[in-house]
Image 1 (tube, rainbow, N blue to C red):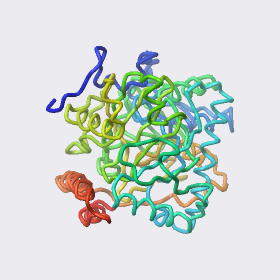
Image 2 (cartoon, rainbow, N blue to C red; image 1 turned 180 degrees about the horizontal axis):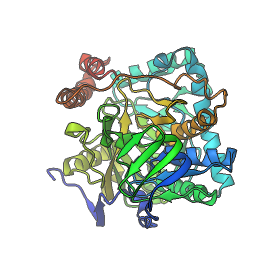
Image 3 (tube, rainbow, N blue to C red; image 1 turned 135 degrees about the vertical axis):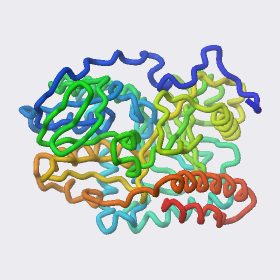
Length: 458
């Protein structure tokens, strides 16, 4: 590494994520063994698939629901994310249209729904509803922050939901000029939530066939090397791994996000920076970061690394390039200079699904039995729960408040073929990096960032 990055003696790069480190990676369950009939087959045992199975079986215990998973439950983004149970929407309110106000309130309510299920099912996932602080560290970021708060008001986001605050009153980030605060966010330990949900689903009688990759999804059937599951409904819950399925390479872009986590930090550090609770922390940079204080007093710190691999390829094991580790460490210690005496214990990466318009969708076709939910653009910890409840209602054919939300049945055009999408994504992030650099001395958002938004429809 060109910058001296202190690595702990037990440093690990990849191996899925740090979140599995204390308990170890789970032993995969049984494979599918032959053809099978079911009422509902769910492809993917991440949060979307697990929540959908959970709510279906709670609503109708007689349903025969099965889950098919290529690795183990929680292997993908569900076991690697930053642990933000946030009420923020994926994409803009404007793109969801007139129903965006209802969708926003449902997202806020979903945080408490997840908390309630964790209590009911005795899922200990280090969950604390401590809110979220977003800081601005340049004048341009501060202008965007003020605009984001003002523009939220027409969508029913009131002062109690989001407001401007003095950053020093929450977390003392070096160079922070202004900040916004929302109570609608909770910290979780992602792998503990995934494994707890998997246990709850199995307890309800849902088999999870792990080490069972699905090679084809078609009306009323999911094909694997070990047998075909025939079902009234087949639900695709594959998020960032969707591009691996035939004919779906351009549907959702598999965007990489990377994280590092420090060794446990002493009480003196937390006293110095004022980070006394479980607040989540973000910023207003274009090449943004996200962080949490873990239950064992580490900083888990994430951001974009190598954002996209040519041809929508996915690096499944979570290995992170050295320059990404270096960049994250540099940014972490720029935020918190006192952290320089610490070291990095783990680095990892994962993929999230990005639709062409950056807005999530949920859909079930009664004629073919095919359905899906995803395209969470990094907001999946909360959105997957809302998706699972919405898929439940759609599969059961019930007209509810959830099935009338504006993300239901949305159709979005595909991403461009290669090499256009590779060029577009990498150009976007290069422009964002340059824009962030220029904005250190600018009072307003760089025109380069606005051009990057136009390129990718962000």
